[in-house]
Image: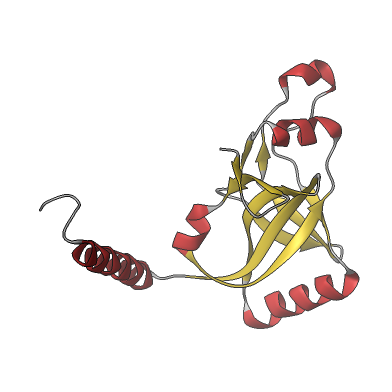
Length: 160
């Protein structure tokens, strides 16, 4: 699933489920504390963000359920695929995020994992959950936009 993003960035994994299940707000770019075999596995595109989330522990932020698959060449010296990984942010940013999470009840959701200038980065966003009605409205808006685009192009597309 390795594709190009912005110049100097190589996308490893994206959490599309987060955009569907949550209303995303402010975003931050974080570094990750990783071991060597995890970095090698990420370079192969072996990661899954779908059920991951970030939480505070001892005034630090950690990402949970971020699955980084095993790197085959590491054999016995490999890593645990589902371990908690520390996020690297400035203290002021961590304090600001923790304040918002405590006050307003937001959740921290990882949205994408990528390499920027050779370093692994994780984008996290403040998120509030969508209700079933909100999800249906989003789907309805997307379908309406598609139909309008089809009509503007001259009706090319699948027939109903």
